[in-house]
Every structure is written in C-alpha cells, then in structure tokens.
Image 1 (cartoon, rainbow, N blue to C red):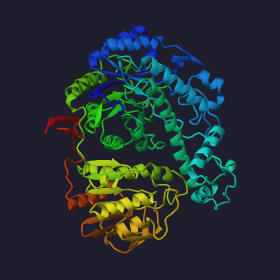
Image 2 (image 1 turned 120 degrees about the vertical axis):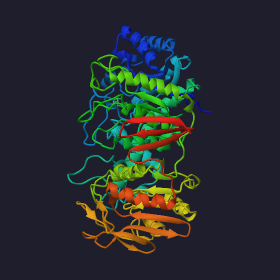
Image 3 (image 1 turned 180 degrees about the horizontal axis):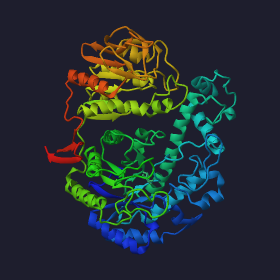
Image 4 (image 1 turned 60 degrees about the vertical axis):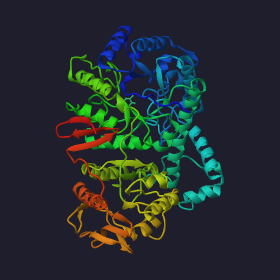
Length: 634
Ligand code: GLA
C-alpha cells in the first residue's frame, strides 16, 4: 500500500533557510514553536545550493537545518529542489532552456527555465531526487516529499526541436498511422496533410492572422501535460526506490494559472493531493473563488484527505495592486479550506525575503518582525488548528449537486477562431458555481471520467460549456438521465468530440438532441447584453434552435435571435433537463437556479452573507459581511 498523509492537521509553510544566517535559523525554530508550526517545506528553490556543479553535492547545510527543525519538533516536507535549475546546468547544456512559440530560446534568471521534454533536465533532476531520498529518507524529521513545485507554472509548453521530436514520438504512440492522425486533425483543410512523420511540427507561431490546426493544438496540450507528468513520475519513482515510507506529492495550482495540467489525471499519481491557492484582488467575490478552489481540490482528491500547501498570510506581490487581507479574512480562508477537506493550512512563506523578486510577498514573519497583526493572526490560527485536530481524516459532507469540470474543454476553448472571444470556460463554470453558492447549495466537482455509479449519487449534474464531449461522456450523462438523474447544460456544450470535430445534426449532438429535446442550428453571439422574456438579462450568447421535446421557459426578446428559446426544460417521467442558451447575468442565474433547486428539493443552508460547510461532525459558519468564522459540533 502506498503511504498516505499522516492523520493530523498541518500548519506552517515554505521555509527558505538558504536565504538566512545560522543565527536566524535558531530564531526561526523558536518562533515556529511559538506559533504552533508543525511542518515546513524545505529546499524548493535550493538546487544551486545543493548541487554546486554537475554531480557535486553540498548537503551539509541541509543536514544542519533538518536536524535543528527536528530537535524543535518541526516536521519537514522535503522538496526535491528541481523547480529552478541552477545556472551551471543551462550554461553547460543550453539545450535545456525552453523555447517559446515564436522560436525564442528563453534565458536563465527566472524559475522553471527548462524544457519539459529535455532528457538532460530529467536525468539531472532525477539524480538530485535520488540523492536526497537516499540521504534523508530515513531521517525521523521527514514527513513527506514535495516533488518540484507548481509544475507548468512558467514553462507549460516548449517548442524547441527536442520537444518536436518527443511530440512526434507521442503522436506515433497515439495514432500509430499518419492516416489516423490526418483524419483526427482534419488535415485536408489548408493543405495541412502530412505524408511523413517528420513533417509534423509543434503548433509554433505561424503567419499573421492565422493559427495552427486546433485539433493539433489540443493534442499539444495533452502531450505537454503527459511530458510534465513523466517528469514528476521519474522523480517520484526515484524517491520510492529508496524510501517506501513517506508519502510523495507535488503542489497543484487550484484556480489560478491552472490551464496546462489535467489535475484529475495527476491526482492518480500522487500519494495525496496538495494545492496552492491565492486570492485575486480584482475579484469582489474572491471568497467564492476561494470556496470553488477548495471544492475543486476535493474533487481531484475524490474525497480523500488533501493539503493546502500554500496560500498567503496577507498580500501577494504579483498582482497589479496587491491588497492586504482584512482582519479575520485569513482565518476564514484557512478554515474554508480545512472545512472542505484540507488537512491543515500552509503558506508561502515562513519569513519574508529581503532580496529577490518575492521580497514584498507577505509571510508569517514580516520584515517588521512579530509585533504586528499578521503574526498575531498566525499564532491564533495555529491555536485554532490544534483545537481542530480531531477533524483529521474526516470527510466533508457530500453534495447533492455536481459540476463536471473539463480541462480538455478549457484547452479547446483557449484557442482562437471560436464564435466569440468572450467564451471564458472557467469564468462560465464559476458563474454557475457562484449562483449556487449564494443560494447556500454545496457542490462537488467531478471529472468527465466520472463513473455512472458516482454520477448516480447526485440529484443534479451540471455540464456548463462542456464544449468537448466524448461519446462516452455523452452516453454516461444520458444513462444518468434515463435512471432519473437531473441535468442542466448550457450553450456551447457537447459541440465537438475529443478530436475537436464538430458533431453534426444540431449543435450539442445526441446529448442536446435527446437529453434536452432541442436541435440547435445556428449561433448568434452578442456583444451587448440582451433581454429575455422572463425579464432576465443575458450576455455573450444567443442562438437558433428548434424545440423538439421541451417546454420553453423564456425566449430572447431582442437581437437577431428574438423569439428563439433561451431557457427550456425537458421533463421525462422521472427527471428534468434544463437548457440555458445564454450567459445569465448573476441575479438572473441565481433566480434560475433557485427555481431548479426548489423543484428538485435540494438542500439549501446559507446565503450570500452566511456560508455553511460541514466536515465530519463539525458545522462551520462563515459570515462574509463581518469576516468571521465559527464552528460547532453537530
Ligand atoms: C507560488 C509558488 C511560490 C511563490 C508563491 C507566491 O505559489 O509556489 O514559490 O512564488 O507562488 O505567491
């Protein structure tokens, strides 16, 4: 059996002692104890300090700090330090540096400056992971392994010749013959037909105003995701070869910068899911995005314990205006994740750096020291988490509503030449999540790979803008409906199959025709808001559809598609299927979902001000007006 996360709640964060003197280390351990810190993530960006030239390792300082932390009772989440290759590596092997879409080779100086198909990077990273595992795998202070850091954050897609060769190999494994590739990509368009594997290039920047083949680009997303997963697996396996005791993870990115990796797939390869979440200052409903992040992570983890590996004590340093958190807001953030299944709350970072580009990012120990509100709040949080220790290993209460979240639809919709540039997949998914959140309805997030048995547990399943829909998913959803499951879907769902070929005979294919009783014939995207006959305001989309087996709840009242169905419901003896042919503005979405939820008898607990989440036997109540959170046993 693979090792799992120890049953406790963790509190702490990224610790970068290589930036500080020995004197500070001692002070750090003292302060960590004062705050109740029980875990630090060590060495994330320390490659250059651990391997000073190829094969020349200097572990002395790491031995010392691990020992010091252990003596202080603080556990270590030991990073493999491979997120930022040292300068010597890319000077010696310049081909390790990544190349962007326009053919420019990028330079050392930031982080993650490596090509994700580079065999040299993979070999050196794996060698370092092996060294660390052999040296520290048996150390009693080690609690878990942290491979790399936020894979794909800065180097998701590389377009160099090494990547091109790996890409062709990946395609040969996927398609076996060029005929199959040509068919799947529709290469009879624009003279794209390939006659030799060597003619196939990555989707590099091409002539002005044009873009590479969208089916090919979609495959490049899949290929890059697979290449990066192989890097993770190589390090993981190197650790596992010498340490069978400690769980291994890598930190995902929950709702920001997460476009490149299919975390549902990645979740199968880690011993436990861990993630990072940062609030977006520009978003007035950032607390709902925060809730979504926790629910999404629980979805990747399939209900198993997971860990919030990073968030911020207050402001970050990478947004246009880096807002500080309100008093009480950080406690709400940490506890919101815990209520949604996180086994604790960790931060970036323990002590604010004085140099480097992250020096103005908040930390537990600020530049000022520890006589400030952040430190006081951290001491308070440490105490509260210790008091919640019994929650470890328990589960968040299951929801009655599921949202299908599909990375591949997101990848396909991030490309140009769609009917509208305003089709924002994650934003649209969140517009539905937010409506339900404000109605006090808790939601589980599932992948398109969800089984029929898993779907059957939900009263209602939503497929918002699920643009790519495999015939398998289509069949699963229709079977779910036939067994009495209720559905809500939207415009631009079920449009293409997994090769991004448009399904014929009404947009949305069988799913929309049979499941919702509509035959959608033409899109009519809009730039200005438009009205519906029920008084609601709609944005971004109108369309033409023949109603073949549904009841019309509202029509578009103006614009080119005036009179066409905007909201419909198809009722079968034991289920209902609602179709939303537009992007409802927030109040309209709330009104729509209120009716759906009432009709299906779905439980509501909370509202826009008061959010309720249940985990184990604990009921957490968040007051978003007063920035408070309280909990009590049920
Ligand atoms: C990410 C990284 C950290 C740090 C923070 C800053 O989460 O993993 O190393 O850069 O962002 O917010």
